[in-house]
Length: 312
Image 1 (cartoon, rainbow, N blue to C red):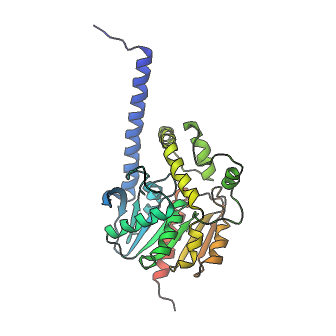
Image 2: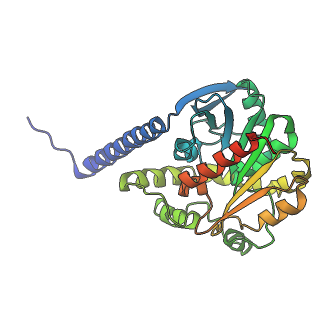
């Protein structure tokens, strides 16, 4: 005897099947990207929080990389591919993001995350390393370098948060007008607008992956909004700590960044006791390590190599 699904039931099953397939394809695609970058996915328990991270082995130098708001460890996956052998890369999902634990009721400010990152590096037995961060992750990396200078061989900031720009960014203008942050989606269809706001030349995403990420980002909207509120209440925390940063610092910025204006670099030069090296990239947005992984990796590897070369 044949049975026929009602149209509504069939539509639901088709949607569930699509989501399952998209999720499976997403996981397969991410696994392939990590494999091509020689990254192994690991986890570790730090003060009752489970951290997920990726690691690329290397015996010469260690580089810890910290993702930005709403991001995860895979923001550094293609970047890691272009770093030479010998550089060990460790890319964690910060608590509250990615595959790491997301407990409610704890503080997710940049300072709190910097302290958690310290415990993470201690648990891994890292004594000294290079530290890089993008956006919120740059703010966290800067705070880390100010509070725990003995651990940071050098600091690398990509379009970092935590410092007020002399020239307001497009995002600041939007928020000052009373509108909602452009970092938060109003619907899954709003994902294209967020991508265009963040990048000049967005990385290619197949349609099914774009749909998957759009739905996932919108599903996390309220959670991300609660974390963003905590970060906003913290103010420009890093700016007050700049004088305490002792490590040599490289600052890389996309000139077309709409999230944080590149004139933050002027503040860094003025307030840091050790004047940072700066690179302003033309036709680049808020996350250079995603938009142009080969160039970003080349800038970082040259920086690390030059630090190791004895000065004549």
